[in-house]
Image (cartoon, rainbow, N blue to C red; front, top):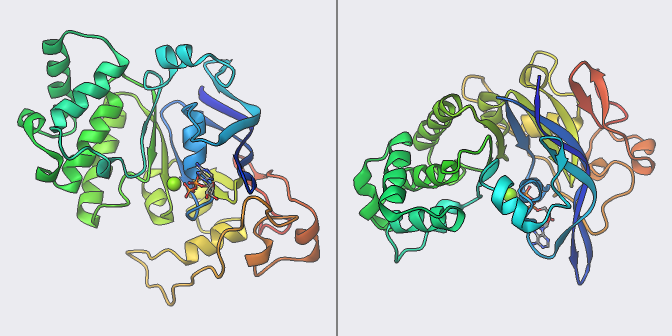
Length: 322
Ligand SMILES: Nc1ncnc2c1ncn2[C@@H]1O[C@H](COP(=O)(O)OP(=O)(O)O)[C@@H](O)[C@H]1O
Ligand SMILES: [Mg+2]
């Protein structure tokens, strides 16, 4: 299948006064045309950092250290900002930011905020811009009157719909969704997921769907990429991760054991003891080893490579259960 995006050995670190936070530390993966790639991991694993890196806007003091982000055969890291704005960001790759629906300005109407966003990226006469905003509100199931409403007059689900519409204005082919349903209740979450599926088919989109919720990935993602402490620890098809054999990496296994499931009786929900490590001085060897119940001495000394364990399925573990 055709590749839309190819990330190769990417390193992006935050250069803080305490040292370099290795938030993205040698990550490689690709995104295929039409797929939803799920990016999952506990809070602090580097999901948002990877997303903003792909959008060529790592937040300060983040800087690219090495690697490439290939979009249509071109590495976008060295491109001038002007070129990124003109052809890449929002045009090819757009993003629904984590918590964006709660960052709408309370003093402006939804319409004004959507028009402003549109204007930043594209010059067009006001009536045309307004018509476009209304058109996109329609695509996300909102009536045109919403333009005149203030954020506090809208429910969470309606605000998130408006944010999603804004991400689609410039007809991107890749949309990164960073925890798009985390702040919503389950009913509204289901409605937003079904809207996203509809929009994906309607506009031929490919998604990078970020969440800390593995059960949600099982529902939406074609492939799942599991991140831990700035690295990919497992990458496989939905059926390989959630199939009868179960995940290959102990971290994914523990994450799954800690995920409530609707249709299965769960004897006991197991949380993973400890927290993800400090990324200024991550543990030697496998970064998960201090929390892993299967670790052997080698795991504390040598870092396991992300290696293929069956076609299309990779894991970074010395003992993965395949
Ligand atoms: N602007 C920043 N400056 C310094 N450290 C940051 C910054 N943003 C994120 N980090 C650190 O990078 C790591 C990954 O964070 P993040 O990408 O937000 O993870 P996630 O989205 O998976 O929760 C964390 O250790 C976080 O504290
Ligand atoms: Mg995040």
